Image (tube, rainbow, N blue to C red; front, side):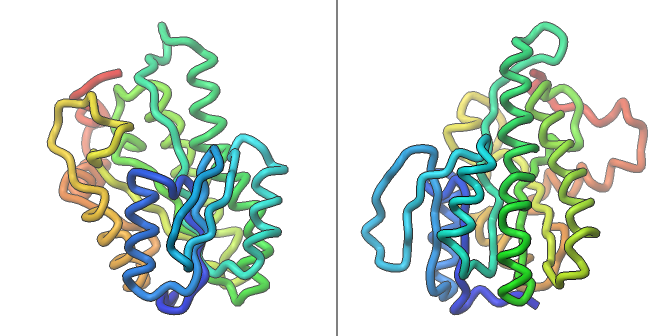
Length: 233
């Protein structure tokens, strides 16, 4: 069991959106210190928060964060980007960038922090995916999140021996800048953050953070043609 109270936490992409909500939620649950990252330097007036610049496309940047946050016990792999890029007609460079951030960036952070978590008793690595990991039609973004899901499942196996719990989080549409143009109902970042922390503290290794995600996971055993994102790419 991983307790948030008195824990030292890392939240990548913690400057805004869901990441900022995760920072707020872990602090509300008694976290002792939170390293919150952004792609550019920023400030936070709360004494428990350590703002850090991180570029997840750089292994050196991830390693520098791990050296700074050598006391980390819980790591939230939240940093990500989304552009509506079709696989066939979209700019391949945009697709490559989404994979580099959403899949390989997640892996870079996991590799950097695996020894830190092992040294601190195991702890937890929490990776943010998406309902679009499972739904066709979300182009490069959905493909990159599907890759991230697969990476997380393998990390769970590889890190079990060091007592690190690897948690995969799937969520639908969250009311953030990333999906502001999608005309579908959205949960608030605070609602999703609370669901994630509830699942983490309950001992879950996969968290389905809302109803659309639960319904989609249940549909995975059905016809693959039914797994389509209504918004398209």
